[in-house]
Length: 458
Ligand SMILES: Nc1ncnc2c1ncn2[C@@H]1O[C@H](COP(=O)(O)OP(=O)(O)O)[C@@H](O)[C@H]1O
Ligand SMILES: O=C(CO)[C@@H](O)[C@H](O)COP(=O)(O)O
Image (cartoon, rainbow, N blue to C red; front, side, top):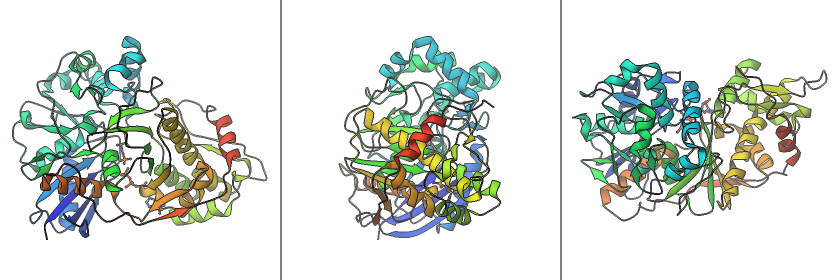
């Protein structure tokens, strides 16, 4: 049996799967937590990868490995490859002002035309502007700029000179200075943000590339599309730390409003994607506030009526990226003496995060994405209440893939593809899934829409 490994270095943890390259059958797996916070020493990812790999029986007998990771995070290296400062993650909003400045300088339309995205705090280009303005010493020391998956792949393959750093199309397309439509760096935008072009930006490998025993790797959402073997008409909704909705597309998407990101996928095509900052942690916070565990939160939410008897929870607990309100906070609306119950609060938390994702699906549809099936994945999809309420809020049936690690699986599938030297990823066994249906509750979204903008800033 020839083995391949897939790594998911996501926001909250690192997961490793080892699979049979030909059939895709799961052989071993392991995981380890990441530290909390929105700036993290990349060394902590490396340590977690070591723990997760050992838990998965090690990688010595594995023929090919691919790394998928959280997108956009800014990793700065000096000329010797030493990390200059902790990485600024995708959900770190200190770069919001820098993003606003970049948009004001060129205009949203010019950014979309150049790179398929309008800068927001999450994008690497905004983080670089923040670094240049606020930490000029660290900016001066920075010789190479890369992303979490680029850095981990580089370390795994020996960490030789920074000029050997590589990335892939999917992750490059989330920087704000690489164009998925043109397949090229737009270094003038990097220079605009940072004041100069760092000596090294990673070379962009093709999707089926093999370098030593490493595949090109990819962003975590692109990996999830590979992991669920997404086909045309599929919209994948992930309830992880981020909430995302995305689909594979054969053509680049350019949304002048900036709501839909025009990313690349990990198969040579495109990945229009909408991302919110608030998903599974809304449930974590609601459970903590009620003093219950996640299972009890789910039971409480399911016990309350659709619409939570008038309670609406706006889930902008970390600020928000879509809509672009980095300084916003969450809110609870509609409280009365007779509806202030734990059940209604739990239900409003689940409905609030799902309403944000329903808006994301609508935004994809508005730029021409066909929505034939909606697949629900991510840690938050383990919640019975999320699974049960999603089809009601989305107003359509929801496909629930069997509980699994689809980002790591997608990375493993990329590794098998690279190892085979084939034109396309291998076809592994069909996804095991169930379909959940519910009576649509459009009034829940209507009421949410009246409350969505009623938030105070932090
Ligand atoms: N049964 C559950 N109910 C609700 N949330 C859950 C459940 N199991 C895991 N989660 C949540 O899933 C999240 C982690 O999901 P994951 O997709 O791995 O995140 P990420 O990829 O961003 O690191 C955590 O916030 C965790 O609380
Ligand atoms: O910023 C984005 C996508 O644009 C996020 O989706 C990150 O890629 C983090 O993913 P998770 O850790 O939540 O899976």
